Length: 253
Ligand code: IPE
Ligand code: IPE
Ligand code: MG
Image (cartoon, rainbow, N blue to C red; front, side, top):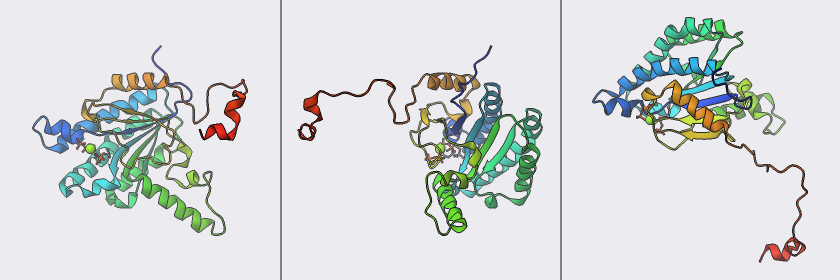
């Protein structure tokens, strides 16, 4: 039988980076990389479904990506529309629930309509939750959440339990694995709250070269890591220290 993710690996998030450099190294315009990358995404979604992930959230366009040339931004918007059109039947056939998270107000009317239709038609699907972060920023998401909470609860201070309920997709919960392609070692404002205890993995492979085999290898390797969440492994033995170490004086020596 093929690989299945362990039970505690529910939510994988991917920063799909390296498209521009992939194209430029082939003397092509950057947007070539985005086009090729959008097809890679189709394969990874299928793989995520096969290996039994509950949720896959991918970073397609950040709030900071608005700083790019308009021509590149336009291609990225067109690719979102093409992706939704192309993948619609496959998503529905495979029982996948599709959502876009981010400032949907920024998306052109026609694309927004297609996105909303697919969200609605796939809303009751019980398979993989596939989320695309578009015009998304982690700080923006947290600020929106806090503001929403304050409007609804003017007399109360917000808590760590309250905040996640006001994020874009409260049902997705924390990220278990945060993976970035393209070789850079940063999070670039992705899922800041949700990734507090995520296992991080960075690969030099640029997104257009990323394969389902590498995806599986990475998840296999991350599955062997011990996640402690601040605790320690020993559960039974009571901590005992030599008495001379217990005096406060000795702690300062
Ligand atoms: C990631 O690839 C896709 C988006 C950010 C939209 P890049 O376009 O950032 O590619 P590089 O990192 O410049 O190679
Ligand atoms: C992160 O990649 C955003 C997406 C993949 C959509 P960037 O290429 O925008 O990140 P930086 O600018 O290198 O941090
Ligand atoms: Mg990049």
